[in-house]
Structures are given as structure tokens and as C-alpha cells.
Image (tube, rainbow, N blue to C red):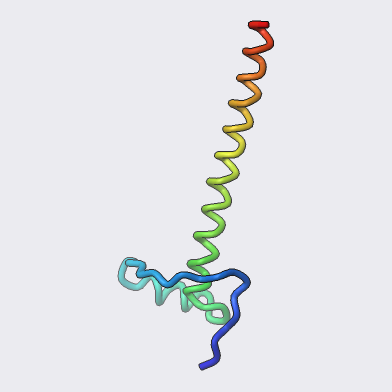
Amino acid sequence: MAVRKEEYPLEKVILNLRKGDFKWLQYMHPKEGAAKQIRKIVIRYRERVEKKIEERQAASKDELELNLEEIL
């Protein structure tokens, strides 16, 4: 079996899924495989969460600057 080169380093972990979930992903994505789909799901989720955090931090910073202007 050939080892596929990924665009980023991978870390091997154990992931517990419900019975049949891995096979379902494999069936739904036969070309890429279930493992790659799981990675994509996790990457998209992390990107969404990090974007929300950045937006909240920017909003907090803007709010802080407005409050400082009011004080001065």
C-alpha cells in the first residue's frame, strides 16, 4: 500500500465513533476515504471556531477603544 503525502503533518490518534459511522463515511466518500473526511470536518470546525474567537476579540478591542475615548 502506498503512503499518501499530506499537505500538513499528521498525528495518529484514536477516535471513538458510533458503530457504523466510519463505514458510512467510507461509503459516502470512497475516493478520499473516511479518515480524510474526518480530518476535513475537524479542520473546518477549528477554522470556524478560531474565526469567531478573532471576531469577538476584535469587537472587544473596538469596544475598549471606544470606552477609553469616552474617558479621555
